Amino acid sequence: MRSLHIAIFGFGTVGKSIFRILNTPSQYPITIKYIAVRNRKKIDKNIIQNTTTIFTENHDDIWNDPEIDCIIEVIGGTDIAKDIIYKAINTQRNVITANKAVLAEFGNEIFEHAQKNKVTIGFEASVAGGIPLIKTLQNHFSFGKISSIEGILNGTCNYILSELENNPNKNYTEVVQEAYEKGFAERDPSADVEGIDTASKLAILSTLCFHTPIPKTTDFPVTGISHISSHDISTAQKHNKKIRLIARATKQHDSVHLTVQPEEISENSPFYSVNGPDNMIIITHEYLGKIILQGAGAGGDATAMSVISDIINLL
Ligand SMILES: NC(=O)c1ccc[n+]([C@@H]2O[C@H](COP(=O)([O-])OP(=O)(O)OC[C@H]3O[C@@H](n4cnc5c(N)ncnc54)[C@H](OP(=O)(O)O)[C@@H]3O)[C@@H](O)[C@H]2O)c1
Image (cartoon, rainbow, N blue to C red):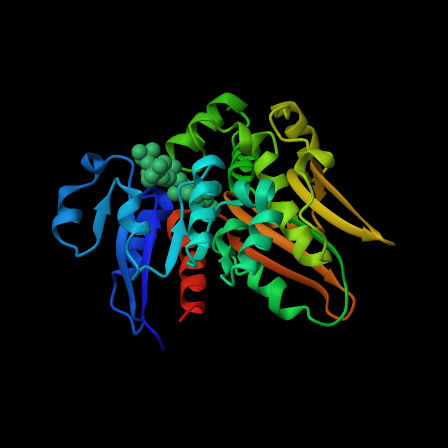
């Protein structure tokens, strides 16, 4: 087993979890040599004083260090993240990213560029947080065809819908604010509640299932949950149904149909039991029938586990 020297870009929710988990004793020879941060003064002094990891605001410290062989991008967004990924590929470093937005927008060119430069892009954490979905799709379905993949892929939306169901006195705005306070939503939740985050994840999954280029999220219908009212939810409940944001990619003849939309889910659907920030994915395969994966779709530790599984794959 070779040893790995890695650099993490971003020390937010996911970056901190990767750092904490990789600093617990293990048999793996992985050294976090650098963490790139925007403002070093914001980092807890105790953390900086009790580690050999170098916290730097200067990305060149990392690019100029020939010992670094793997870059972890957990900054988010598309601009800086794309630059970091390209710089890593151009300097022959493997890349691991949790960033579905950058892959949905630029993934086709990123994967092609990585292949040309003989480096790998690990992206297990980019869809469904801690659920081992990407490698399952890459490794387990070599024979036979997947006819559809559908899922609840956004923990924020599922949390909001579940809370509205369980608390008829609360309105949408209150629940979104609570989701933010509990760490289940970002300050600006629009990418989640408008379905854009789910669409980016569906685009990535569709490519893995149907071996097509990554579709543009603007090329298929995407509806979020921001227009769902308490009345819609209570009406669904009267009919023993729940509203869930469902992403679906279905292969019909030679074309793939993608949609993201809120749907009324009846009691006999597996999606009915998915509450709070959980995710569920149902893959329908010609020999396997339905395979269902369910678990933590977000959260620092869950997402870090997927990043770490990609790191260990490089050893
Ligand atoms: N959180 C989850 O549950 C989850 C789940 C799955 C995937 N993801 C993905 O993981 C990625 C990171 O998410 P997160 O929740 O960890 O985000 P986050 O908490 O906002 O952390 C991002 C960090 O990156 C830092 N940053 C921004 N620009 C930087 C730069 N130029 N150089 C160095 N650091 C910079 C930010 O610094 P400041 O503090 O100074 O702003 C922040 O600390 C995103 O792509 C997200 O979609 C997250």
